[in-house]
Length: 467
Image 1 (cartoon, rainbow, N blue to C red):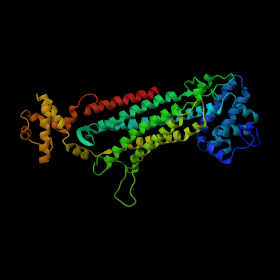
Image 2: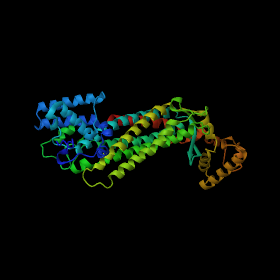
Image 3: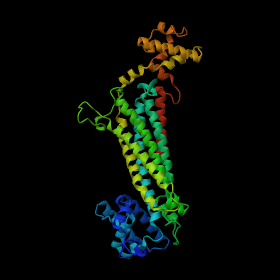
Image 4: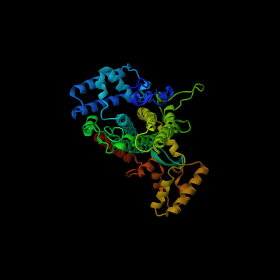
């Protein structure tokens, strides 16, 4: 190796890399996070090389023991990371050579940093997806249980943020749960494409050594080796797909956060969040701020930015690997951390939501939320829908003038708008009657909410079993 460069690739160079350039091009300050996966991949690679006769069993064991010791050094914080060695891969390989001598230099036979880093990232993503899925499952379970518990709790449903029709709190929570169901499916689908092994593609064209990529894939738990060596080293679709999943998930969490922020306000007063999920004001002692949902709402833009960064990173790259791809890790790492933390916060917080049932019920009574029920009643009694719509509109106008909800009007007051109205109208004008009338799959009737919660619980259990 050239003394002038002190680099693994220094033989071709006649002068050392500029100190600034060394710092500018190095990735070890952030890709050292891949150390465990890098060692895991190297152990599998050495095992395969011994199996096909490129390494002896003794060399394999020496390499594996050395890598295991290095893993211990890293975990104990004793490992000395070096910027001149550029990245996590060369830092670990250099330390291995220091420990076991020339045998350490044989580890890189039949591979390149190009397929090595692509493999490490996929191993990392697979591990993180499994952690994220566990938090997503925990959130869904807590949400389903809360929905089941609040199947009878009546609240106003909104369109345009205006009171529309009464629904149940359980039904609203199950709407959130449906969003998360789709997110869960997207995450598992993404994992399938993450779990393809690039190792063995080498720099871009494969290798002349008699490697067995199926053996390495099996040792590392990949479903299969990547089919094409050019694509294997340059593909970052899986990272883009994950950040796409993350963006949609955070969009959903942000929508939920917006409602939580509204509901905790004095103007709505629908729910209470435990103090441990809130903070106070440095100047206003009465304040209880819903900081957790606000921060999740804010972090959504951060993840959107990472998706755009990765899409932009890849949009003009020719095949195969380019140094640009070093820029994939920081946005991907931060997206992973942000998603995991936001899900943990929600999984802890949602089951602890305390609905203020009286406030919800009173809000549902305002805004003539059973107006559609009166229209449906008239249609069932032979009134044409357009005429029924006009009659109900007149009734609402009267209610606004007299400050009475439809359910608070007397039969005589209602009959001034239509003689078709009889005493049984009050069965549908109550909030309870309104929600109970939506007694079909997907409806807000309490029995339907409980049945939907049961189906959701069973589907989640089946999904966990398949995983």
